[in-house]
Image (tube, rainbow, N blue to C red; front, side, top):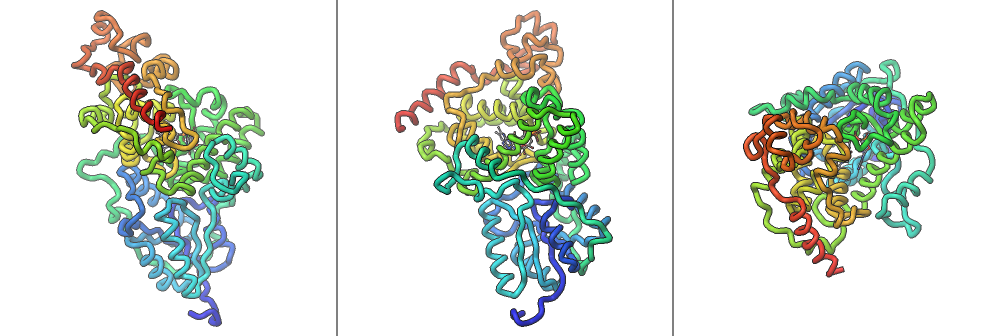
Length: 489
Ligand code: FAD
């Protein structure tokens, strides 16, 4: 098509990491254009570059797509799901649907932005109008800048600069059937055909029992949090034994809810008197950490594989002990809070933030295993595995990242357990072997007397492991290794 020819009417809406209808800027623009809309999702595991989703994320994606498809049907939007290289699939879908316009919400990992930039170029050369929107972040990562215009590497100034940009926009409404003009329906694959869900073995029971993926599930989870968790959030968010955090992370990961919706929902709760300004501010600052991670990913695209601080490239990681790695992954380290966290991860695909910090510190510092090893395991097992948050958080714990916790901060797992899970409720939920052990010993069973262990029906080393490393000695070993970096300045 040349520019002098009339542009065909019709918009192709390409869903990606924005699997929702409400507050979806690209969808909103497509519907507002008054032109017929055709919707597409592409499962692209063929283009080299984008990181393949982990097992838990693949399970989530299948459920989320099912929910999105049903929601699209309800408003009269035809969603086709296709498999292949996104460049080819989108180009072909444009031709088949006969549209003159393509719209999508932006994504931020480098491999994906490259695909999008090339595709935009190609489609525009073919005479199409291509529009991209921000549906994922409160602020575009390049809009928040240091005084000299570059990246901000420390959270507080980043968040100050971000909030100084003003209030994030209000959420956009969900399009109605009456407003939406349906475009040409494309055929596509069924969700079962995508092969996203585990079959032999089907290990997803725990995920099914824990989560309701999809936009409606996200809405319910948000209502529950606002009714039950937001009040007292600032005080209780570090307690894994309490239902004190929102659990919105997988919903945010797949774009079933936007940060704008969360931003405004918590303020509404405050204005209605059901949360304090402190709770709202703290919760918004957590959304701020997510923004900060995306800012880092934008400026340091290799965040998941390369130390942000180059001096860490010389860190003397010993060859990992496979037995240690296995014990960590399976939750059999002998440190109850670590084991509870790793088993929570394995059964539910999620871990409480405080416990993520404890298990990550344990892997890196007590076991001296490279943070990338842990990042990779989380990538495979978390339902919220996120290219920005996961990588930035692992580097933060390792001390190799921006605004990192200093390397000499080594979490003591039993003290952390006693402080944040004081009655041992969290440990008991995931480590049933220790169910009968009293709160006094639950975070350090190796210190319990023989009688206390007998009373709880535990033989250490048989029913529950003895600690695989001595924390104090491991800490000294880690600090000595980290000292070598200090020497290099
Ligand atoms: P809430 O406390 O309710 O917070 C609301 C939202 O704010 C979260 O959903 C999340 O989007 C964001 N948020 C909260 N804390 C952080 C944080 N520290 N950094 C960035 N964003 C944050 N989060 C992920 O979404 N995906 C990951 O892959 C991921 N990997 C992590 C790995 C490690 C080693 C650590 C220490 C943290 C990781 N986090 C990750 C951050 C954090 O643990 C989770 O976002 C949080 O536990 C999700 O629970 P929630 O939704 O109940 O959080």
